[in-house]
Length: 231
Image (cartoon, rainbow, N blue to C red; front, side, top):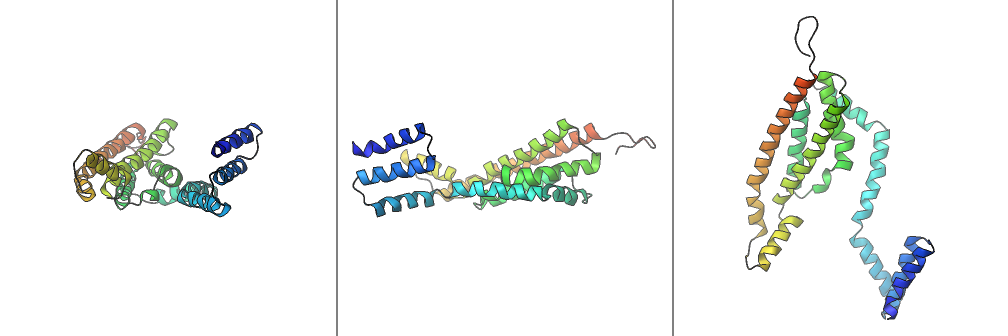
């Protein structure tokens, strides 16, 4: 029963509003000592647990860095770069990111993209700038639609691209489920069968982005008062 004393420490510490980190550490030390471990073994177990889940802390370290980059003008630089490219459209830019995101996900580099670290500070502003360079300032409704398309590109490319990597969690889950039901399948075989699906996703989403470009052009192009052409 002494092993459960750590629960009492946690409840008492939270009720007294003591620093949660201090409460958890004390509860872990007390539980380990009550279980017959020495202090070195308890500290080693805490260190191993922290090291195994250290990626959680890395996420929080990335966010301040992105905030500082945005404050230093990252979005404005991205907009300026795209505004200088005459051939850039919102759909073409997003399809380029879709392709790069899917390829890197297929190689297991799923952390290279993402909404917080890539879409919000770079991809969405660049997609907006591509539209503004052709049609001028965007109405709020179309600005939100461009941002939604940028977020969708990241989601879809990652979803259909990561299954091409043999060591991704989804592939291993399928292999484990099939093995548990008496079906032996190699992870590489599953990854190869995911290629047609990934290509189909790229083709279908490329068509959707092309149609989005057309909708954007029809909605935002205005007649030229001099010659009747569209801008």
